Amino acid sequence: MNPPQKHETQGQPEVPAQIFEQFLIALQKTNVASDIIERLRTTIVTNHDLSDKAIRIAVFPEDQSDD
Image (cartoon, rainbow, N blue to C red; front, side, top):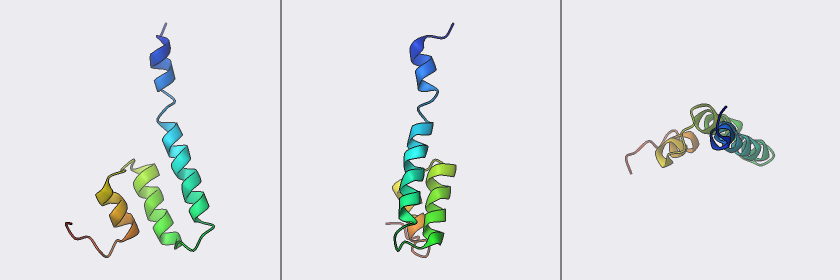
């Protein structure tokens, strides 16, 4: 039988993805361009990359300088 802690942690990775997906759905109701929203979805939800660099590239793909 699995210890309770191990069983509980299995579902946790989905919670952040669900929160980010709700955020991206809310962005669709604003003036944010759909291509930016899709790049953010790919970066955050699909690739699970929350790094500053990855998010900057998703939002500003033309400005990929090494700040």
